[in-house]
Amino acid sequence: MGRSRQWQVFVAPGEETDQLLIEPSPWHDERWVRIPKEHWNLILCFAESLDQDKAEKLDAYSWAADNNEYDNIYASTEELEQLLVFIEELSRKIELADPLVPEATEEVPDEYVNEEHMRMLNAVAAVFRESIRLRQPFRAWVE
Image (cartoon, rainbow, N blue to C red; front, side, top):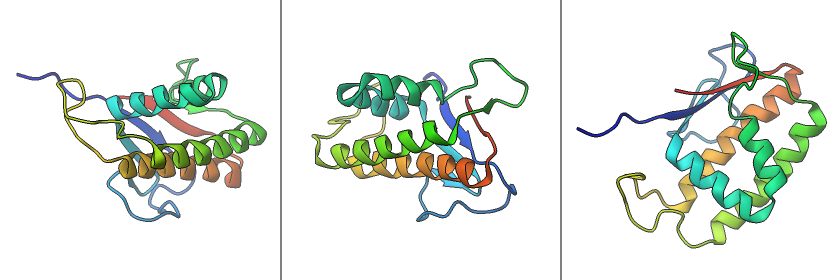
């Protein structure tokens, strides 16, 4: 019996049934983004090769460090805008990179093409943009 899968979750502020303003993908529904944790870890690992400080910030915004009841992430507009620029750069680099998952393994059972990792990042970026637009925290945790 295999281990149960963990998910990286982000939730944009706003009306729960409002859609994020991005192309449909399997990685988001309404305000919710759910990414297989092992793929989020691959993205963060790739991000470290570009800019360790920004990669660490992106990781830090993946869960509420203070364990607040609602998993709110309070980030300044400036910080989120800097991360959005980094996510765009990261997405471009992933597009040109060798496959992040060259073959399925026990740890990473899905051979998603890099385009899927780009779509995952696009969904996270949409959450950050909504947080800026509404001037409200977003939520993030691992389940």
